[in-house]
Amino acid sequence: MLVGLARAVMEKTGKEDRLNKREAESFKEQGNAYYAKKDYNEAYNYYTKAIDMCPKNASYYGNRAATLMMLGKFREALGDAQQSVRLDDSFVRGHLREGKCHLSLGNAMAACRSFQRALELDHKNAQAQQEFKNANAVIEYEKIAETDFEKRDFRKVVFCMDRALEYAPACHRFKILKAECLAMLGRYPEAQSVASDILRMDSTNADALYVRGLCLYYEDCIEKAVQFFVQALRMAPDHEKACVACRNAKALKAKKEDGNKAFKEGNYKLAYELYTEALGIDPNNIKTNAKLYCNRGTVNSKYEEAVRDYEKVYQTEKTKEHKQLLKNAQLELKKSKRKDYYKILGVDKNASEDEIKKAYRKRALMHHPDRHSGASAEVQKEEEKKFKEVGEAFTILSDPKKKTRYDSGQDLDEEGMNMGDFDANNIFKAFFGGPGGFSFEASGPGNFFFQFG
Image (cartoon, rainbow, N blue to C red; front, side):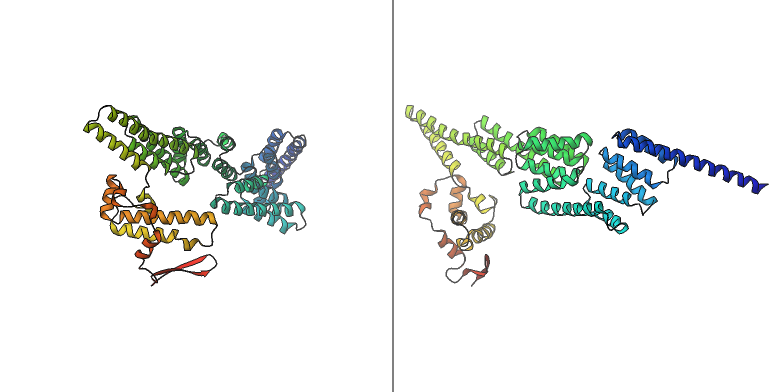
């Protein structure tokens, strides 16, 4: 009796399975019909019904994957394609669709593995052969772009990403890199458009938020830029580029505002220093720096205006007080135009004698004319100028008396320092011990090593 009951249950189950398969096949055929009409949403619905009826049929997942790909939903399609080959590893179209999804999402290495598997199953498959070549092309474009980004050849990076995106249209990483380079090239509307498209699909994408902020930052909308950088860091606290950009933006905003405040208060010396410090924060921010240069130029003109004003006052009433005011203004004007020897040597104003010597040694060797003898005439001229300035800086800052006069703003010409007759080579020879004490010797084309006697 029990055997009969078991047989009856098995027959009923088998009958239900056959009915389910027939119904699933019907759903698949209807899905195919809608797919042929390019009604991919309806096709998706019918393939889903087929899967619900027979969840272990690889072809149904493969068909739904193809439909999702046509709808541009490559990440969801990837899941179905992977399920299809889990159910049937010999399913060539499943491997092709998995590879195509990986490639569209920018994972070219994974795509290569899928296409290789398809070729193992069918080595003459033309689609697998072509897609394998496409995946390798994307890998090559990535490598070139990485190298060119480090070289700051942003135009070439954009070119490589455009080529890669032809094969990987859904890759956010490629789009972000392209957008970042467009921003660095000053093509802000294009960069904003790319970032905005990504944010419409994923409002928490830290990279896209960073690029939006970068565009605003370079367009001198510093406050709005900071908001985007902060938002990006909320999404990804370890986002290094957003962190650096946020820090620079805040520092630039603060220095500029402090400079403006000092200018309004008539403290032109401090305003000049603050604008100069702001200009050193980010040389790539052309628009903001242009305004800072303009502000600093205005400060310089204010020095000159102050001198003219005090000259008029002193001519009208020659008192000791007015004479001192004129003298102070003249001194501040001269100081605003003189070279910053600390900056030239790259040392702090509180640098010790030993630190000044070390800095001179480093900079003098870096800019010595012999080291650049193989460079263009323009580069040689610029390095000679820098070499001379380094010598000037060392001459002043290594002499306690001259350094004190320089720090206090006194006129160095009163010390008999005629910088027009200055010979940087004499300082260099004296520092390194005179003839035979130092030489540049070539160890090969463009290569030098330093030899001390």
